[in-house]
Amino acid sequence: MKLATFLTSGLAAFTAAQTPAPYTDPKSGITFSILQHSSGYFFGLALPTNATGSTDFIATIGGKGTGWSGVSLGGAMLGKLLIVAWPNGQSVLGSFRKTATHASPAIATGPFTQSPIANGTYVNSTHWTYTFLCSKCIQPDKTTFLPTDTSPSLGYALNAAAPPQKTNPASSVAKHTSQGQVVFDLSKARSGRFEEWAGYAGVPVAKVGRGFEG
Image (cartoon, rainbow, N blue to C red; front, side, top):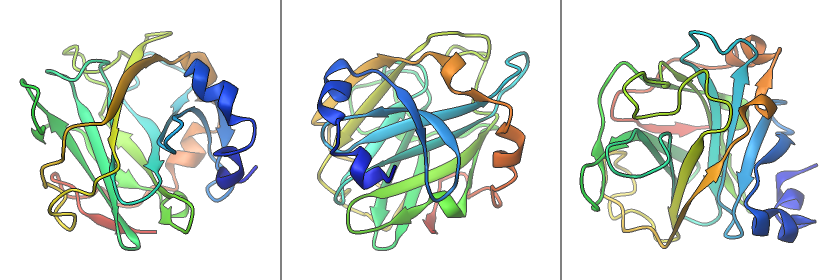
């Protein structure tokens, strides 16, 4: 099923329930457990079958228009590891963020990296998508979900307004116009093909993120 179709057909009941469901991206072939918001925002996870000691996952995040999409890997906003992304022309910018206040989150630094997956990152007439291998992104400091969690709550946030410096991955972002938390059943995100899919990833982007053209 094409994502454009996925965004419209049979979506009302799904988004109303805010329940992640399996979805295979037709370009990358990667199967995610994906949350779809009525705005067009989406976030999905793919994980290895063995949770013990794993700190990596594959993520896909996107939306419609030129605004930003974000996810909290720890559920809440404050003190958690966040990922923010938005389109800039035919490229997509992504960065890690963290904040202790209800303000535009600053760039976060640490061992974690984003390695874009080219065949799952693109901008077209219906939506934009950023797919990447998130390495060392599951942290033991309670800023993210844990590898052994079975049903963690992850947070989502979005705003249809483009960041004021949309060419700068460290740009501030306007306050979210929609946000919430959703429980992910991680058993539905696990796949024996994870290592194959992770092999699609390119080199890690700079710590502050950068534009990536699919």
